[in-house]
Amino acid sequence: MCGIVGYIGEHKALPVLLNGLSKLEYRGYDSAGIALLENNKLVVNKKKGRLKVLEDSMDVESYQSSIGIGHTRWATHGAPTENNAHPHTNQVNSIAVIHNGIIENYLKIKEFLKEVGQIEYKSETDTEVIAHLVNYFYEGDLMDAVYKAVDRMEGAYAISVICEDEPDKIVAVRKDSPLIVGLGENENYLASDIPALLKYTRKVHFIENDEFVLLTKEKIEIFDAFLQPVEREIFEVTWDAEAAEKEGYQHFTLKEIHEQPKSVKETLHRRLNSDEIINLEGVDFSDEMIKNFDKIYIVACGTAYHAGLIGKYVIEKFANIPVSVEVASEFRYGQTFVDEKTLFIAVSQSGETLDTLQSLREAKRKGATILSIVNVVGSSVARDSHGVLYTWAGPEIGVASTKAYTSQALVFYLLALKFALVHKTMEVEEVKTMISALNEMPEHIEKILEKSHDVQLFADSQFNNESVFFMGRGVDLYSAYEASLKFKEISYINSFAIAAGELKHGTIALIEEGTLVIAIATQQHLYDKMLSNIVEVKARGAHVVAVAMEGDNEILKTADEVIFIPKTLEALAPLLSVIPMQLFAYYVSVARGNDVDKPRNLAKSVTVE
Ligand code: G6P
Image 1 (cartoon, rainbow, N blue to C red):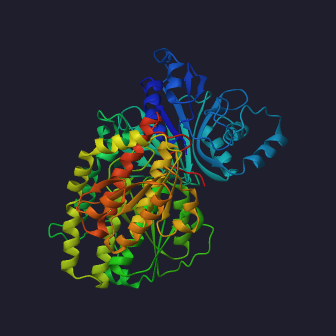
Image 2 (cartoon, rainbow, N blue to C red; image 1 turned 90 degrees about the horizontal axis):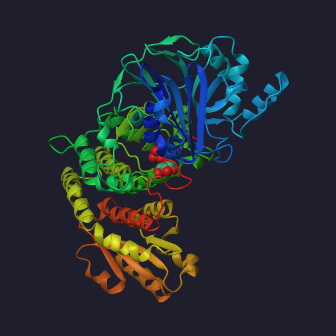
Image 3 (cartoon, rainbow, N blue to C red; image 1 turned 90 degrees about the vertical axis):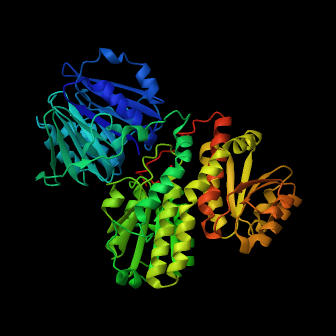
C-alpha cells in the first residue's frame, strides 16, 4: 500500500513532503522517509515508526532543497525497520526511489544485477532493486533509465525517482498502484492520493496504468507506455481540505461515524430526483440491458464485502434476482460463471484495492458488464467500470471504514429498488414507501449518535473481554459480520460473527460464564428463533446484549442489556444497527489505548494481493 509524495518548485520541499505524508499515513505507517537534493547532493533520511519520529529527527527549517520525494510504508517485503524504509538508493547514493506496490520478480532482477556487477544490498525489500536497476541503465537521462528499468519489472507499482545528476526533475511511473500529479504555479506535485495535495492545489491529473510522468518546476509531462506524449485533462477537486481534517474530534474514526447523517443524506440526495425517483447518474444502462442480466456477482474486500452482502439481501428481496457475493481475493482464482449476461458489481471505498480491481478486470475480459460502487472519484476501479455509482460519502481517513459502509449499503438499496421497478417486482407505491423510509435515515442515525454516551459506558465496562461473539439471523447476520470486523480491527480483541442458528453446531462450545454475546435482533419474521438462540447462550452463562428496534419490549425480558435503534422498516435495519456497533468498537479501542485511526498491521488502501 504505502503513500508516496513528491515536490518540485520554488519553495522548500521538506515541509510540503511532511505535510503530504501526514495526509497519506492512512496508507501505511510503519516507517517513513524522504529524499532531498541539498545543493545537488542527495540527502536521505528515514525512520522506523510513525512520521512524527522522522519529523522529530530533523531540523526541518535547515533544509533548503526545493525538490524531494517522501514515503510512508506498509511493509510487504522485509520487516518494518529503518533499513527497509524508503527511499532506497543506488550503491553510490546518487539516485533515490520510492515505491508503492510489489515488484514480483525482484529476485530475478537481483540475479540479473549480480551478473553485471556486485551490489551490496542495504535492505530486504523488493524496492531496492529498482534503484540499482535504474542506476544500471542510467546514461545521463533519468526518464530513459526509468523506462528501461520498468521494462524489466513485473508487479504493481507507483514509483518516483530523483537523481543528483538531474536535479531539476522528478520521474514517476505507475502500474496498478495509484498516482496523481498536482499542478501549481512554478511548482508541481505528485502523490498517491488527493488529500496529500489539497493544501497546495486542486488541479490534478490522474496518471493511468503504464504511463510515465516528468515533473519539472515549470510543467508536468505525461507519456504513454511507448514514451509518446499524452494529453490529459485537468481534474478539479471540489471537496475542501477541511473535509479531510479532524474538526475537533479526537479521531477521524469518531468524526466519520458522526458524519453519517450527513453522508447518508448526500448519498440519497444525489440519487433521488425531485419526484423521489431513483436516478442512476453515472450508469448508462437501459432497462433492456438490466432485464438481460441473468447473473449478478458482487465482489469486494473487507467492509465493502459486507456492504455487498447487504446488496445481495436487497437485490434478492426487492428485485428477485439471485446474487453471488465473493471476496475479491477468492473470486480471482476461483471457478466463476461470468459471461456477457453477467452484471459484475465491484464495491470499494478507495477504488484502488488490488484484489477488487483485478477481479473486475478478469470479469471484464470475460464479457461482463461492470458496475462499481466507489467513494474516491476518478480511482482505478471507477475508471475501469462501464458504470459508476459514487457513494459521495466524502473523504474517509480512519482506516476502519464507517461512513463509506453505510453509503455503500444505501446505494445498494437504491439500486435494488431501481431493479425492482425495471423487473416489476415492486409497485411504484411500494418503492416510494421504501424511499420515504430511507429519507428518515439521517434523522434516525442522528438519534443513535445522540446516545453515544450510553454506548461509551457499555464499552468502558467491556473493554477487558478476551473475546466477543456477534450473532444474527437473515440480514442481521450480515450486520453482525461488519460489527465483528469493526470490533476486532480497532479493539484487537478476538471476535467472531456467526449465524445465530449455527451457533449450536460447534461455536457454542466457546461460550462460558460471562462471555459477551451481541445479538442483533431486528427481523420480526425471525424474532422467535432469535430469542431462542439468546436463551441458549444465556443458559451457558453468556452475557447477552441485544441490538433491537424501539418498541420491542419482549427483548428486554430475554437479553441482559438492550441497545435500541429507532423503529424503521425491517429491511432497512442494517443501516441503523451498525451505528451503535461502530461506536462500541470505537470506544473499546479508546479504552484500551489503541491507535484507533491507524490500527496495527492494517492499511486503508490495500494495493497488494
Ligand atoms: C482494507 C481496509 C478495510 C477495507 C478494505 C477494502 O482492508 O482496512 O477497511 O474495507 O481494505 O477497501 P476498499 O477501499 O476496497 O473499500
